[in-house]
Length: 445
Image (cartoon, rainbow, N blue to C red; front, side, top):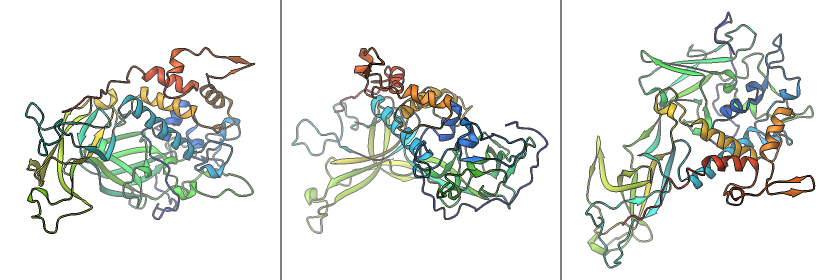
């Protein structure tokens, strides 16, 4: 939509503030659903489950075959892909890529990854915590491209409200559709750490409102503009279908939109333990003098991790205590730990993100791979629009089938493709196969 015009910019009474949402969340994905829709050319308002029938002329008309309204949940429209099934398919595609390539396509927090602490070749040694060079022992994490140890943390910056003038719905071009949501909030945190969530959801990833159309932080004031249909009250999207069938949300007014949203700082908290060492409870080494010793439970001690090789995913867990910074300490038990739990941030980052011109770290290369995989694995059609239907059908063709209508040459790429035999899976494999193996499995002794 145009970003300038003569439209009204006065706050209007919206819908419920989002507190006590009865709708259930759909899975969080690295590739947002709105970005998916934009990249394959789906009308954004219809994809959001809405239309604006009272605008004249109608904005985003829904009368054509490409004007089908997308349901939010599978049970609302049984013969069409919903946001819910699409999110599950995207999530599956992202996990498939991470498993095969060895790292996530964009940053992901990993929590409570359990690893056995490296043991010596000579099993009689019970207190060897250093390698042959005299350095602390390292170990391989499950994923490479480690960015840092730490845990996901959120801090509420404030709540933007229509009543307070910090959440404003705007019709920038005077066409009758309030297509823009503008949020202003005083803060001094990093711009890319600012995230918007439905009110009362404690910053849970599943309830994030994204992506912003634009975001700035000038003079201690955050200003973010979004497509207004991203602010449709989740309860509105969860309406049950009736005898009249599945109905679109009416965006001719801003009544379906929430009147408040939470603004959070989301960051990697390195003050929390990124390593938790564990020992089997027993009375050895005089740890508890043989009296009142732990039984049937582990002895635990906090620590931190140092990233030795970020690409290969080699980290060094170290016992430590935190007071402004982490300070090394001795093990509480006089032998090497049996296990260690790891917390870390890992994943690839786009060139645009690293250059500071985008707050979305997912590159277009990975986004397209996710799209191809996700569509190839969907079972329902997207809508009756021929352009989209042709795209979905093209990516879902099984190249391993031979029928009277035709067959496909089964080359080595098809037979060795770990993703599957659909065309979308083949296209993704051809793009990422050269990335496989960049996270090497290294023996750490």
